[in-house]
Amino acid sequence: MSTESHILVIDDDPDIAKAARLLLERHGMRVSTAADPEAAWVLLASEPIDVILLDLNFARGRTTGDESFAMLDRLIAADARAVVVVVTGHSGIAVAVRAMRSGATDFVIKPWNNERLLTTVERGLALRRARLEAAATPPVAGGVLLGESAGISRARDLVARVAPSSASMLVHGAAGTGKTLIAQLIHQASPHAHRPLVVLDAEAADADGIAAQTAAAAGSLLVIDHIDRLPRALHATLLHAVAGTRTVATTRLDRAGIRTAIGEDLLDRVGTIEVALPPLVDRAGDAVLLARHFLALFAYRHARPTMALAPETLTAIAADRWPDNVRGLRQAIERAVLLGSGDLMLSPDTMEPTPLAPDLSLARNEQALITAALERHAFNVSRAAAQLGLTRAALYRRMARYGL
Ligand SMILES: Nc1ncnc2c1ncn2[C@@H]1O[C@H](COP(=O)(O)OP(=O)(O)OP(=O)(O)O)[C@@H](O)[C@H]1O
Image (cartoon, rainbow, N blue to C red; front, top):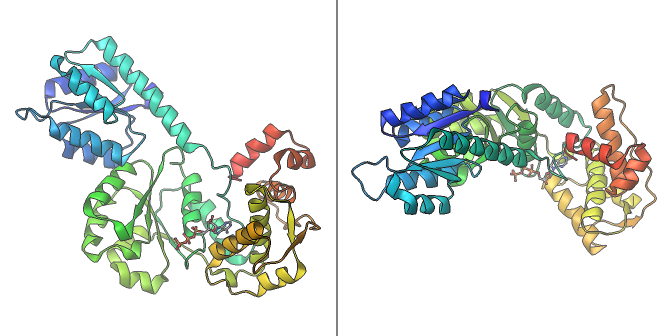
């Protein structure tokens, strides 16, 4: 890890910063230095940083060190996985303890012993790696975009082609059509999947929130949720802040609506590639397929017996306009599983296994096969593995790979 590790030293004393840089560079690390918080934020916004060395006395002349603590708070607010090692003078043990309570991971006392500083930074790097790995653990359920209609196939294809690049993407679709899910899938398939996904709620955003979230998204992906709801006064702030950051913006508006809402400049910046999610009513066949999936999922989650959709229920699902789209269908199925009655009739399981769509892609067929087996067995992994001729461990590995 040492060769790729990037350390940021925040210290207003150029001699101290230089001494740290020379020592750490000699040990194969990349080191950037910043003399004040502003310079540090510029670096944090443009480059992924693994460990931050923060001098607690850098507001020299101000005895309280409040500016340093404010910086520490903002660093941790911007990235809960940030590893911050504080550097303090001999008399600063009490200050170091306060910093640890505020979220610093370790401390070093000046004048430092080189070996001690090196060990502390290496320990910080190991902690950072562990935190990132924990964040990258795939979810056990959810995270899969189901549907065989043309609109969903197009969306899936765009995500597969564009997510690995650095292009910014704009996801359109009415409420509950799967925009948030698409944003998560783009992140999972992107080169930044090992870093946390950062979300900015445009409606609630202010200038500080924009700065903090953009800094947190450095080297990762910033999801700008409902970008059309960003207050007009903040359009220029956001445009400026996201320069150099990859974004995935979501909106319920169509292209004409979003152009009016956020203006050409911002649209040009966030809309390099557009993914349009059609309403569920326009996805022929998908409502029934999704209903079967949610039925198996909720039966498993709420420990209810496996049920099937009664024939008249299938007809009703296919004919419904689903104004709340996939979210509405998901909630209707969950209610039916929990209450055993309601709008949707369920009957004891007589369901045939979901037929597989003809598809020459090995991975997609494997994913479809695994999804079908899991649904068939209400997410009972042992039984699904037995049907597939896999060990449980092999099935778990594949489930993780496909986000099932
Ligand atoms: N194609 C799909 N396959 C499986 N689950 C889906 C699909 N589309 C949406 N969902 C699920 O439906 C629910 C609603 O989707 P999501 O939250 O992504 O909608 P949204 O478009 O972001 O809505 P909003 O505009 O309200 O923010 C989520 O639980 C999501 O996982």
